[in-house]
Image (tube, rainbow, N blue to C red; front, side, top):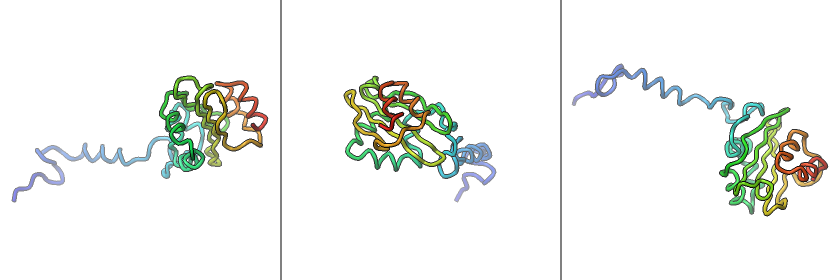
Length: 162
């Protein structure tokens, strides 16, 4: 039986150190995310996509729960072009716009990592189809500002509580 290589050298006599270094880097947690995949500060999300925002460990289960009956539409918006994540005063938000016009067909996601809260608007054919949380209390100002980037009328509604 012939040995292919030793611990110090891989196949072909090449040192294993560079390979082990690269493998070690791949095992490190992603930048900006805690070891458990939960973001502690909204500013860590700045510049990411709405798909990355929706895939966060503390967002994905909530999003799946509120998407019931609208999963396909919501996931189309998550994959579609839209805004990058903006962060302000502890809140992160982004728009996804399947079809290109968020005011007509869009998905707004807002997140407060500190408390693990989700805000969502689903707009279909120019009408508000789904709102999370449901109507009631006014939305935080940074999220209202995010909604206003697409619809001033809808932002005014969210500022009043829907």
